[in-house]
Amino acid sequence: LVVLGIETSCDDTAAAVVRGNGEILSQVISSQAELLALYGGVAPKQAEEAHSRVIDKVVQEALDRANLTEKDLSAVAVTIGPGLGLCLRVGVQKARRVAGAFNLPIVGVHHMEAHALVARLVEHELSFPFMALLISGGHNIIVLAHKLGQYTQLGTTVDDAIGEAFDKTAKWLGLDMRRSGGPAVEELALEGDSKSVLFNVPMKNHKDCNFSYAGLKTQVRLAIEAREIDAKCSVSSATKEDRRNRADIAASFQRVAVLHLEEKCERAIDWAMKLEPSIKHMVVSGGVASNQYVRFRLNNIAGSKNLKLVCPPPCLCTDNGVMVAWTGLEHFRVGRFDPPPPAVEPDDFMYDIRPRWPLGEEFAQGRSEAR
Ligand code: ATP
Ligand code: FE
Image 1: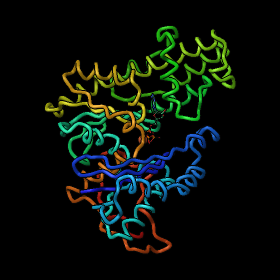
Image 2 (image 1 turned 180 degrees about the horizontal axis):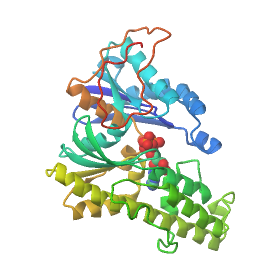
Image 3 (image 1 turned 60 degrees about the vertical axis):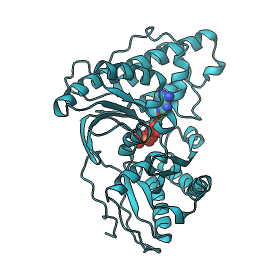
Image 4 (image 1 turned 90 degrees about the horizontal axis):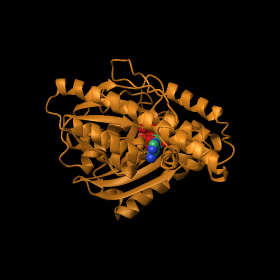
């Protein structure tokens, strides 16, 4: 089996070709980081246009680098949700064109399931059931994965996701926004004292597994204002003392943001063990899982609960086409896919895209006909 995976749910246009045995034949990503810096965040219309501009090239390059043509593929997998509707549409349209022209089945993929399942490509021993903490720009969920397509959500954020808090912290600290904020905060935090600013750990007294990052974001903003840090002055041109202040805030924010993850993970693992005592692994994935401090701390938590941590390599934690191709393969193998679409689709064709789609919600392939 060989599957092409296409991902356009947010601001990266990605494609990859993966074999059934997990061998990655190619992966290509075109990032919209500069656009993001220009607009200060994801602007759906601009993001859609950027995807449309590069999608053909990205897919062609993925095939070329794999040394394959469309005829060698077994199926095309594409993210159909959750994400920005306009952006998802670009990927789905491309996937259906390729599948239609070459008579290939098509697999609709859940973006967050893909973040979780790519861990099974990396770690062959990872079998269901397992825990998964998925932390990214738009999501902050902890789930119990029972089997393919079946997940119980144990906790989610009541407001912002941790990645959003990293991104805003980076912006307010005047860090380079031409790449996403997370890596910039992680790097600056290395220079700071993580105990110098005492932020409160969110939701300390809540006896559930939910998360909240809006309050921490506000605490960070207030600390920045109190130190009169000017975001318009970049950190590279700041005075030594100013830089030190910024690094202290970055380190203190990162410590508390991760402490919150740790506390909720511990509780979620205890809950999950009651439901599925055979769990042996905890997956941590999504963009924020590429953070080394996050990986180190959560490895300790998993270890203390006798679980093995599985964290994909950083390039497979942030959005990528490999996770989509792999998740497509997993579903394809058990017969969950749509038949090849017609070579030419009617102009008024309604694509089956799901901008809001909770992980674990029953999913039936074969619903992509015109409505
Ligand atoms: P979602 O998966 O919720 O739809 P997304 O697809 O936009 O969101 P991902 O690529 O999965 O996002 O993750 C991007 C997020 O991860 C951004 O918020 C980014 O700042 C964060 N991130 C990436 N690298 C790091 C890092 N080293 N440390 C902290 N955060 C990071
Ligand atoms: Fe993502």
